[in-house]
Amino acid sequence: MPLNAATAAARLSSAPMMDWTDRHCRYLHRLLSRRALLYTEMVTAPALVRGGALHLLDHSPEEHPVALQLGGSDPKELAQAARLGAEAGYDEINLNCGCPSDRVQSGTFGAVLMRAPGLVAECCAAMIDAQPREVTVKCRIGVDDQDPEEVLPDFLSQIRAAGVRRVIIHARKAWLQGLSPKENRDVPPLDHDLVRRMKAHFPDLHISVNGGIASLDEAEAMLASGLDGVMVGRAAYHRPADILCAADRRIFGAPGPDATPEAAVHAMLPYIEAHLSAGGRLISVTRHMLGLFAGRPGARGWRRMLSEGAVRPGAGPALVEAALSQVVRAAA
Ligand SMILES: Cc1cc2nc3c(=O)[nH]c(=O)nc-3n(C[C@H](O)[C@H](O)[C@H](O)COP(=O)(O)O)c2cc1C
Image (cartoon, rainbow, N blue to C red; front, side, top):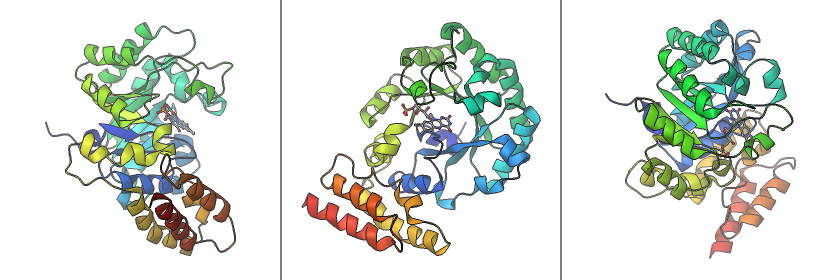
């Protein structure tokens, strides 16, 4: 059976990250990899359905393949939100079952849903029924005192029975009491091996692993070990060129040449121009570009010029060009 575009792209994805993977970030990431799957920040179903905040679905046509991540736990509301996402053109609708923040806990969505696999299955079935795009789930291996060896297979078999064929597993628990969301991305130990065992247990599920993957070498090793996909979060944001520039060739087998951060900067200039003409601020775009030259000569100057200069009145593409010239000089 031919893979749909989002499933093929899911061999490597950049993770959903609130406040980080907005449309400007995704536009930049797409310039670095034509193939990788990009995820939005989480958008809550109540914001779309009750709040009518349809602007949260805005994105550029260049971003495809791009997945919308939804938060929620009401099947009807999620079905309606999924329909809105499909109508807006997203290639995949993903349900967040991994986010541990307080605000999200109080709304009964995110990682607390690991305790309610029946409800998650009901939500997924409703989302699948409501629209034509693939519905996927991003989850943890468990929460609090749950035993992942027991709850994860049960969770996966219930959502599979509801029609879900692809999942992304953040390979650590969320501890819902006493840890901040940030600590919950570092403190609970990673168990990549459990995710591999889930693939052996559910060979027909497309399983992507997430958590702590910091290089393309590591991503390749995960794929070679039998997993179907790798999702990279913080490393893709902070060092996007390291993760994405060679991804099309190394992960997807596309012919070279690899993308370069310099070419991406040039390609961002008209985008920035259009953003400013529409009344946007330079910093909203350039803040996602700070890590573009991470680990390369001139990286510090690039970062400093952009972060200090982009907030000045009248700052525009000329600042970005000047910062790039500084990088080119440093590399020479
Ligand atoms: C700033 C930030 C915001 C995040 N927001 C979300 C979110 O909206 N939805 C979600 O499922 N995960 C969110 N995450 C978790 C990431 O998607 C990912 O699961 C986590 O960072 C582990 O992957 P990594 O080690 O590759 O970063 C967020 C992570 C960060 C750093």
